[in-house]
Length: 132
Image (cartoon, rainbow, N blue to C red):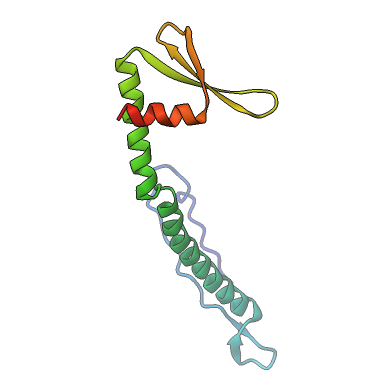
């Protein structure tokens, strides 16, 4: 067997040579060629990898659509933003806080941070409805 070694192959600027892939065929003890177990395993692994890539590609498109809120939520967010802008034009803000027992409190404050009123959920929704 003869080995051909090119000492310039690893030098910078040397042309890159591609090796031709050898077919995955093994020689059986009787001298005839047949598919090797390794070749079969490699083909199965490649098929599985293609199948998994296709599965990830199809699931990523589904996941991308889940990151967009439904239209009714987008409408409610737009209305809430409008209500916040209306309160800001009046020099007021809402501050939400949670107490130790887990209850949520809502304070109506002015722009300097002074509390004007502590309101409950019912008053909050009434305030938002009036600011539309």
